[in-house]
Structures are given as structure tokens and as C-alpha cells.
Image (cartoon, rainbow, N blue to C red; front, side, top):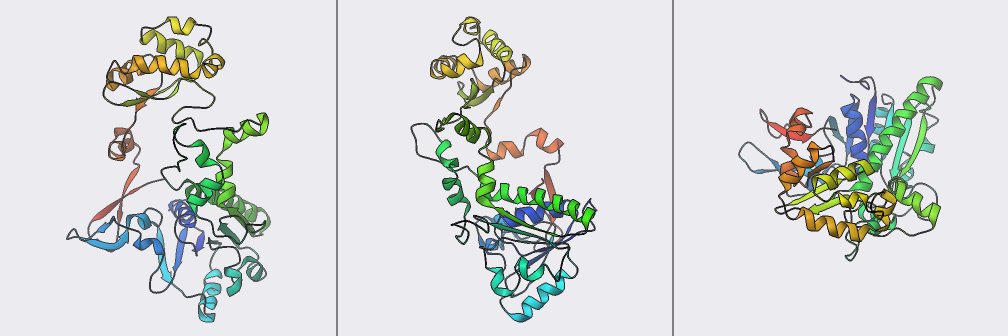
Length: 358
């Protein structure tokens, strides 16, 4: 049971953005009916390896990619390119509150399942359409993929080392953020419907979601006209705030105030840096970024990561490790917050599979 336990969602989405949205709604208690293509289902079921293992340790046909975005759902197969399938979709909509789809703009219109074709028969339906570029504009009918959107949005131009090539984020950030934004929009639409009885059409694009994540970097350009560039692990507006090389590993030092910088310098036995007019304020540190970071890296590499993490944390200077995924998932805070859930799966009866909670 959850706050959305009285809500049913008809999920026509596949791959990642739509499934992330509906999975989140399912985590909140909604009843999710996932409609898949007969014969092959959601294409990401086969996006492996790795795959879920059966009781004998052999691969099943369920990829871990698919599992990451499709818990708390019941699946059916319907071919809605045929009239019989279209009738089944409309029948399911008689008992649904929300429809989520992420086909290219205009695809469902061909089958009489677009919003305009359904809104009269289902005036209280919340219809969420997630596309690459939205339903209007010159790119409306272009297919949208996460990687393309990361490049188009400018995100890759600010990701990576200054002298290196543009880099994408290590996860499908455009897809995932779009799924979460869609969830927010749907919750707002449910509130609107509760007050008015009216459904709504939600036109949400990967491009808009990704552009919104430019946040303070985008605002800096709009205000100053200066095109942001790649800074590696550094922060464009705060120094020192990045990854530093200790004797045995990389660490993160995240100084957000002048007071924290003074504490860092005192612990590092270079208190004079905090009094230097070039470095005493964040404004000065940003303007003299390279000089300061070169000095700090020459200091941090003299001691172990543990030395810095323990010592700086002890004087209230934010400092932490650069973990790999194995280390991150085994962190005691992850266990304390129950971030990994045990989930049953019909392919592995009597044995739970692990999944990340949200």
C-alpha cells in the first residue's frame, strides 16, 4: 500500500524514460499495467549481458537493464497496431487514471490512441507523452535518444577534462531525469483533477528535461554571455571544490565557505594560504584557481586518503572518497537507509533478487 494505491496507470512506454516514471509511480503504490509488444516485449529485456541468473546460475532472458526500471508492474502483451488491440487499450482505459507513453510524436495518433482521439471519451484521463523533443517545433517528429540529447543540450560540452574530449554522463541522465520530471507532472495533474475533475495532457521532452539540468551553468551564460567550458571535476563557482590526489587514492574536498577554507589550510599546515589576499575569499580563489589547486594537490599527495578524510571531517571540512560501484553499494549508510531492496521474481522462485530503491 502507498499514497497512490487507488490509482491505476496504463503504461505503454518502453526503454527507460517512461519506465522510470511508471516504476516510481508504482513505488508510490499505483497499480501499473505495462503493455508490451507480442513476441519480444520491451526491447530492453534483451539489453545484456548481464542478465538475471536462475536457480542454477544460468542466464535468464531478463536483462539487468530491464529490471532496473520495471519493478512493481504487471505486464500484458497487446498489438495495438491492430483494431482488436486498440479496442483492448480503450477497454483498459475505462479502468485507468493515467496513460504514459514515450513513442515518437505522432506514432499513437496513427492508431487512434493519441490524446486528441481519447480525450472526449476519457475526459478525466491524465495522458503523459514523453518524447525526445516535444510535440511542437522543428524537431518534434525526430526520434530522441539520451546520448543525442546530452550532446544537443550542451551537457557534454561541460563534462570531461579541460584538455580532453566532450564526455557524456556515466548514466542515461536525460532519460532518468525525464522520467522523474514526468512523475512530478503527473502528481500535479492528479491534484488538478482532484480539484476540477479534469484530466490533462502532459507534453514532456528529454530535451527540456536535460536543458533544465544546466541549472546555474545555463544561468551563468544567460547572465554573462560567457560560454561555459569543461572543468573536469572542478566547480565553476567554488574553489577548492573537486577531486584531489592523495598518496594512495583520489579524494573529494568540497569547501563551500571561507571559514571551511581556513580550517582546511590549518589542518594542512599551510595557514598562510588562508591569509593570502589571492585566496582569502572564494572570489579570489576562483580567479586564481589553477595556482591554488596546484598548491593543494602538491600537499594532498603527501598523505593517504584516510588521513585526509578522517582529519578534515574532524574539523568540519567536507571530504570523502571516490568509490567504485562495489564500494558504494556496500557503504554502511546505504544499508542503514535500506537503499537495496530484496525483490521476488517469477524466473527465480524462492529466491530474492536485489534492486536499488528510489
